[in-house]
Image 1 (cartoon, rainbow, N blue to C red):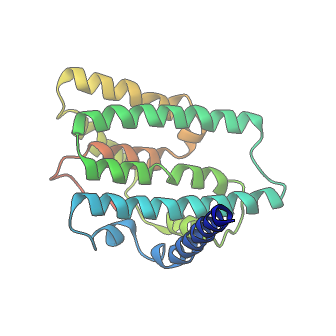
Image 2 (image 1 turned 120 degrees about the horizontal axis):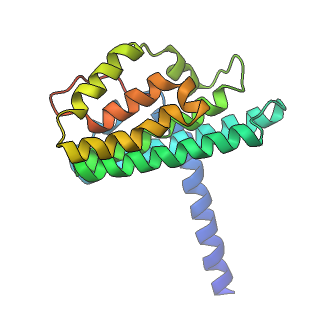
Length: 208
């Protein structure tokens, strides 16, 4: 009997925490991830804040996925396979770049910013979405593809030749072997630049 009480209490506390996190997300997502993280001072606290922000993005993405399914307009096997290939290439590029940079906060931002691509993938199948993150991704005014591509290529040259080759080999499939990557090249270049940019580099606004 005592054991059942303890189990019930644990479940109740877990449910309360989930509910609290869900309620907090409506507040957290009204601000940018940078503003949210900048309220913290230590590296572990910043990492935790960005992880929390990422969990909220995941919740929003899941809600968008549910909405998409209800419309009966969703990606079929070919599109899903293409996006999975893109995601695998994205993970590979990110892993290589972060290994070279060795920066915990950069790593936390990179893993958060990766989440934009699933949102963009779903958004292609939903018209007139009122989703707050989709609206932000579509209304943000990033630089032109030409500008961010030039900055990415210039920054790439700051790495030693061997690392340049490794990064370029990992990046190229993102925009050449995936229809999703070709469609969203500007976002791909912005993401890649954000992962390799030097401390004195051009600070473009993040997707979240």
